[in-house]
Amino acid sequence: MDSVPGVCYQDYLACVESSGTRLDNFLTEKLNGMSRSYIQKQIKEGNVLVNGINTKASYKICSHDIIRVYETAIEELEINPENIPLDIIYEDNDIIVINKPKQMVVHPAPGHYSGTVVNALLYHCKDSLSGINGVLRPGIVHRIDKDTTGVIVACKNDVSHKFLAEQLKEHSITRTYHAIVHNHVKEESGTIKTTIGRHKTDRKKMAVNAEGGRNAITHYKVLDNLNNRYTYIKCNLETGRTHQIRVHMASIGNPVLGDSLYGPSKCPFNLEGQALHAKTLGFIHPSTKKYMEFEAPLPDYFKKLLEVIH
Image (tube, rainbow, N blue to C red; front, top):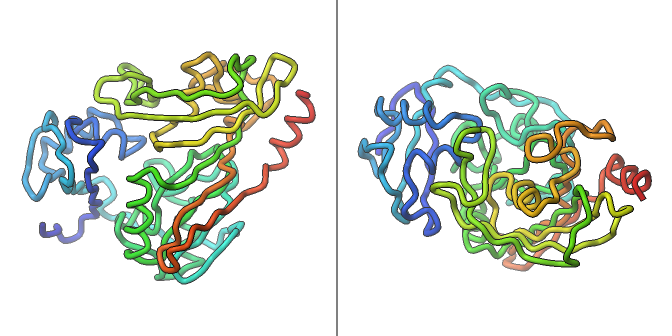
């Protein structure tokens, strides 16, 4: 597949779990922040190729399809390095593990072209970031939401990126989150297994059992009952869908505290977004082939919440 001079693009490799998903639904999930109608327009105008061929929005994805998206809207966009301090947990020649703060977007997207983790990584790592995800997401293997804090990993070369991406695909990476949720969680532990896809009417939201949704599995355990009004829990992700914990906990009547998208519109604690923290990340290192596990301590706001509510 030849590139078009002067136009940015990103490639996506479809995994087995994506088989049977409509092309427009697949890209709506991947290109978070872009509407389905916008994506359908891009497909119709030939800005999306599947294995180098123009196709329709209704095309059903096959495993190992390569989907190339030409982002004409960012044709002249240059993502600049920015001297933004990073809370680095670990770093070597292959990977960098950081503790992401609240209010920080992981990678540039419409409305957020500066102040992101990527801008900071470009300054810190210079040219040492993998290029698999194109100019907008160098080094980025996975992401967490803007207002979710905690540990994420980025890769400094393509070999490391592919190695970690394969672990993500196989669901062998350890991902543990801590959260404070509304109401008393009835079971001490449990597993939520649904599909998650784009909401039928509100394209900013995800929903369980949505059309074209993909399998999503969350294991949860109660850590503390907070006055029967809130519950402190930990969640282990078996899959990593957009907003997965937020959607899953809301689906059983326990939306994450501060999450106005899936829970109450008003929060009594004046929070900036949801009380959700990516605490632990574990994986096989791409070079040493040894299992490594990293932790990000609970942020101050989270610890104060636990004290106030308790």
